[in-house]
Each structure stands twice: as C-alpha cells, then as structure tokens.
Image (cartoon, rainbow, N blue to C red; front, side):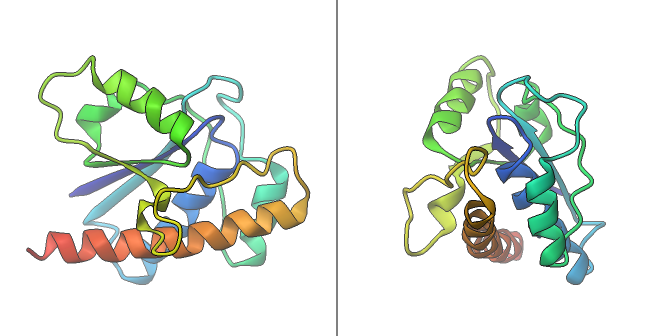
Length: 159
C-alpha cells in the first residue's frame, strides 16, 4: 500500500485541501485499497479541530468534503508514510529537520509544487489571513499539483 501525507503549518487550510482532492482522485480511480492518505500540521495550534470553515466551503463548492480532524506532524510519520508533501519551504525545512532524527527512513519528502509544472519550486500560499479569493487560488494550485502527484505515484507504482 502506498501511504501519502500532506503537511502545512496548522493543518486547517492547505494540507486538508490537498488531502481532500487526493482522496477524491483515489476514490474516483477505485484505489482505496492501494493508497492511504492523511494530513498534518507542523504546529499544534488547532489539534482536534476541523479544517478552516472557508476552506471547507471552497472544497464543497468543488465537490470535495473535508472531514479531516487536525493533527500534528510527528517524526514517527517518517516510518508510516512513503511520501510526505510540504505545502511551503518553511514547513519543508521543519520536516527535513525532523527527518534528521530518523535513521533509515524510506519516506520521500517533496515540496507540493514540485509537481506543478509551471511553478516547480514555489510555495502553496497560506490563505488564512486572506479572503475567499485566496482560498479559491489555493484550491486551483492544489488541484493542479495534487493531480500531477497522483499521476506520478500511479505511474511510479507500475514500474
């Protein structure tokens, strides 16, 4: 089974949206028995909460239900997941710092937009202090990046 973790700061905006879109792709392709997914935040601000209401509304507008409960990223995630995708370079650095504590992990860590053919090394912007247009923009970025990542792992698993 392929296991994927999406990570942002608070696990209330970007990573739940990434996971929600990925979950829809997994379900639409009948791969639930082959691919597991989750999301987490590097900070502990919102543990036990649902994703941000504005992100849930944006997701629902696109046929995605965000029912994830916020949790914090933990160094043990390196032994649980094959792929860990950070939404921005700050969280990527936090993840890589934690990775140094683990010996022999096979987890592959990427910046989410590594899979965005147009903005390969860019961050997914944090919409938290923005308006609904910012949430919609994040959805569009993640729709593109997550879809490309999904195709990457689907193709990679066939090798």
